[in-house]
Length: 179
Image (cartoon, rainbow, N blue to C red):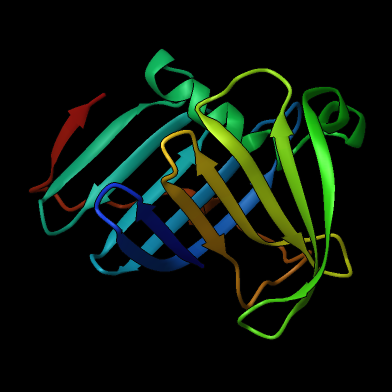
């Protein structure tokens, strides 16, 4: 996956590349792991509402809960597009079909725009889904015009996932910082 974060005030874009493993679970819960390879190597795992972010270059790991008040709002917003029903989306967003589009990786998609019915930290969220309904690209336009765009590539569907993949093994010299 590729994540581009555009800062409208500075006119600059930061790009991160990595691999995502995502496993939906019951009642809007999930397990996920992201291993970033560029620009810096880092690993993030989320299991049972607990996150661990490991930065080898800093020799630090940050540990906390995603339901902590500081993080919960953002996580809940992101998850609103991953594990909810069509009826829940319709209840919370004005949905606009923008049209059929071809992404930079050649995938033909349906482009949808979601505008929250209640004021949020963002103006719109956009999703480009393939013929199977799988989100291939997502973009959030924040109230300050900053954007976050995520492009998924090399998607593997219905793959058996061993739960141990979500465990990050830390070296002994790593300082753990609780969040």
